[in-house]
Length: 388
Image (cartoon, rainbow, N blue to C red; front, side):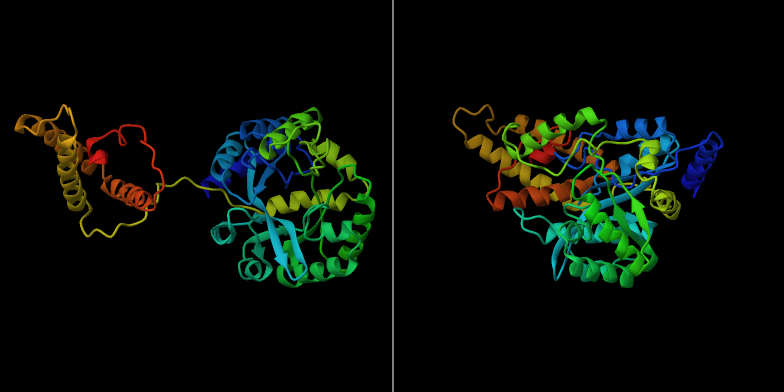
């Protein structure tokens, strides 16, 4: 609550000087790997310069930047909104939606949905969330219906598939009720007006509210070409031969005034961005690392035993090597055993034996599976304990 109070206080100060009447709810940061050139420091700078009271991060199917984003935004007095863009599958196919965490329950559900999708999807396929699973985990989440080229509602609207769009809109209404919004975007494409007309009709029919977004991938209009270069690098293509990516020069971080003007005919779609920001009150807090438990009843004793056994094997192998500097003498062994005991005492006093046992477990498993293991780096990796 202290963090939220700080944000509220900063927002009150911002409001007293007049803040922007729009909040960006669809922003890809550099954590959308090979998709965006927007770094979190730059996002904080842009939002603060425009006096925006809140800002959402919605990277592609990940929450990698959630903690760092929270810290950056709070430093400049901007309310962070945590979300992501996911692919949602139903009986008609797939489409992207934006999911925003309203509270801790929503963040936990969002984490569960993403984790399950990533763990059950083959590496060469794009992860998806089944609409039935989303219905079971929708508590604490707000949903935006997706853009025009690949959105859950926007895509069928773009292609004139009225039945599919209507069926999906009704499903969103029945499952999410007031927590689903029909997303409108204006990126300067020729077919957007036709798609928007169908979406407006669905909003009237279902009662789903409208929300205006700009799918931000870069800082300014001039950064469109560098963003395309980034995509070329990711896809191993040449700029001259690269096809349509769906990203236009309008996919930049527009000011609130630009967005208000762009949607001047639909002020409620702009106003709803502020309402959504008010409905989201979750920040990612800092916590100590959470390590999985080992199977040891006494981690200290197990670490000492495994290290001692491992050192014996290491020294025996070293002694067998031709022209080895190690001759197996008691004097040489003493150097290793004393060093081992000193390191073990330090590790145990720092309460790190569980960490060493966990790392040892997955390194040993990787070697058993013929997976190459690197030498590691740092004091831990260079220790006699890790070697043993």
